[in-house]
Length: 270
Picture 1 (cartoon, rainbow, N blue to C red):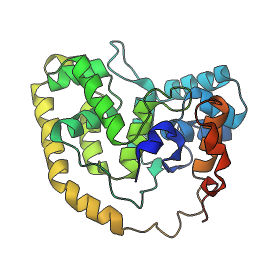
Picture 2: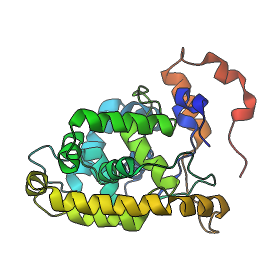
Picture 3: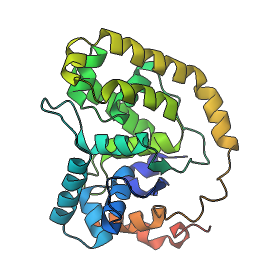
Picture 4: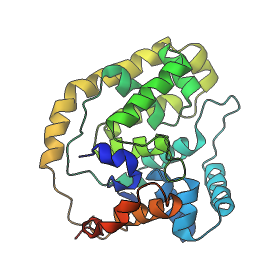
């Protein structure tokens, strides 16, 4: 379970992401790796460090992936990186390895509704209009979620807090794929401006899905604590938490120098 220590060490939560082949990535290993790390919430600087590329190269690859995803958004309704992750998740080409620990916090209905809209890649401004709240209220809810999940929202050199939030909640099964799919279908291949300008019906759908998730949250918590990894999933090239910790140390040499003197935090045994 995430603790306050994780807020200073954003790489220590064990977010494990696998990518299925032949979707947006044209069998290109670099693109696959970039997409995998984006989905795990890594920043461009961290991805560049991992691949030994320049940050500009990573930005170019990310821009290419977003273009291949064929997003059409003239009004700023989408968060492109989150939408890219959402599209892959919807196509079931991106999978998160479920954590063996139950969620450390049960979310409220409002938090869950906000997180559903974040997960499908909508911008804060659009989320606020859909839920009938201000953009600042959306930001405040997200900041509270970052705190609840031990995500350091200020560690921008290492993580993208918004994407890390999506990754952690998916890996902990706080949001089911069925719930995600319901919201995705209502925001994909539609006129988002029309949805935003007349949000009452969609708001009711979002709150209904959120309410159901909140009711089922205790059951999910129990199930997650009992589930074991599936036999065929062990060979996938997951994100190594020890590696991202090393990236964090290199990018932030003065952040936690004592962390390097703790050999027990090396690569976990398989």
